[in-house]
Length: 295
Image 1 (tube, rainbow, N blue to C red):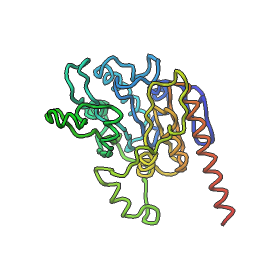
Image 2: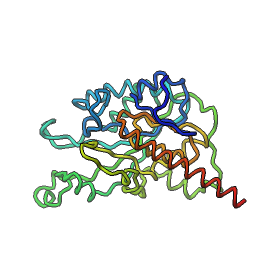
Image 3: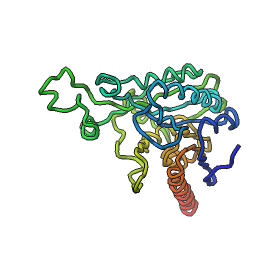
Image 4: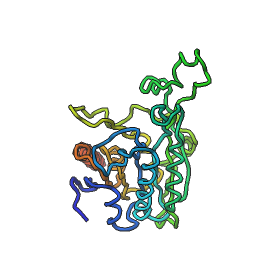
């Protein structure tokens, strides 16, 4: 197994294909996986032939993704959770012959189930339809379309967090106490719709864009990652992101006193993530130092 390209005391980043890494990593060694996969062929992340985002069509993406799910099942511990951030995808008239939506979330569910995962749950993450309209200019969200012919109007597209569990029993229980996890918080987080995830609460707001830089980058919201880390892992457990990007999952995991492993194909992303993870680790150490000094 190759050495990490970047690492700290509690984190490691590998510039590699995550399927290859999971195939040689110790079996059942990951406590929690959180990631946002390539959205079929919607965005281009890198020029690598190993990048699933370079699929020619959704069917090709799903075929590749099933191999990924099989490798992930091997790496995750029995009874533990995989949290997948996604949305459904717009169809394109030039490619598909019609304007509508693709059931991308359903494709992901079926891929995980075919690999042997248990479909554990789904959370819907509310998104502002005005922001979507301004960003995508989707025909179904335009007010002028409502006035012209509302048969083509549609609601905005939310995000989803799909939860999958590896069969078997969890060896070490994840416990929470009222002192650090009040019932009022659980009542909010147990909702099937998370209404208060801030869309702009993302790490890449701090990333400068360079000439010929990536064509798209879409990190998860930090508050969303934090909920998943707190719910489905304990201190010092290993959180994994197979599509690490600029390190949003790792940034939160390290701040929450977890360990982190990330795989990334694009060296520029890996370098950025290393900086963010080192920052998170340093701030955590400083916090502990202040706590000891005040004790």
